[in-house]
Image (cartoon, rainbow, N blue to C red; front, side, top):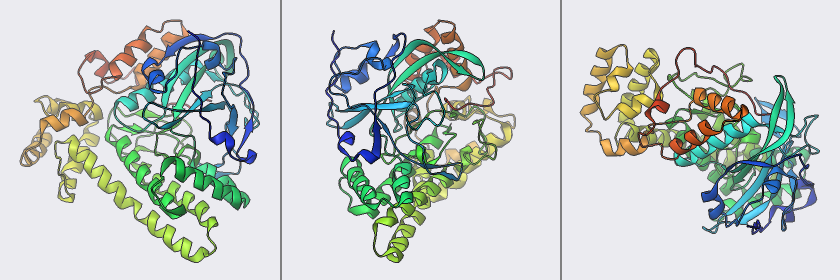
Length: 463
């Protein structure tokens, strides 16, 4: 069936200073490794063509471009970043009337590649496919994966020659805090105002002006980070160029889900100081919003008043984060009406888990059963906590809907990638099937934490 994508492009109508128009770089082959039929239907895409999703053929109605942005990377400002290995093909309006981006990752060099080859190898492509779709199944706002295509060309990295691939990523948009930062930093106020108006119309049409946008993004990011923490997710690279205006999770590079719980857990190979550790994510979210505020302040003539208003909004964010965290973790221990008085109860369990190295996912999943104490070596301490908890009459049905049985564990993803590189996609498809229903106990061997030999201590950026 001939491919038809009902493009309805808006970002491409913005001034040329927002992007560079160019086509993806053609590749040797186009072998469709994974195709998300359900998502394609949702996007009103008919048929398929691997050469389009490999970047070799440009479909009718597309407006290919690489987006410009800047960003703070590990706290240091980089004045120009941009899509160094991605091309936005265009946008569609899905069945729900929502505008969605269609982007190719690994589609070749752009003016923003910074000496890179603009390509991706198979491992990071399949990692992002699996983890982003798992996040969607968990009900957490995220970009989605539409297709993974093998290019038939090698990609050269430190490990040597690796099989090349392209991921088709779907997002509510690819607007980032860094998109605002670049125009503010350059003093391009007209472009900054145009971008702000565009972001409001696309994502937060009910808000009033730049401060309304800041408040809405703070709220969205607070909910997102609390959701991450409730499933033990560590983003790994919360730079401002990876922080979306829509409130979606984006860029699954050195990310990971915790096995044994520890609030200081770090997996990213490039996070040498623990800046983006699990427990630091709320603080970094606030820091990122302060950078957005700094950019938006440039739109106001009365800078002193703007600083005062923006400061109040950003300073209110920790309370939003705490409320979202309490609601999420309260539900995880079966409390639909958790109050601040319940926080010591939640933190008491987490403290026991950290002391004993208990598995985050399996401990919460086992709470409604008699097997939860088996996650602990100090079972007397758990029994004492359990007695306190039972006084609150927890709801097991609520826990069943808030505590996943399965997550995309690092060791399973690495094993899947190794198999795919060897030509075996069966582990990929098995993972995808199990992760599509994370609150059901199927394929229980996939629930198992890694053995000592299977532990993956670090994850790496997909570039």
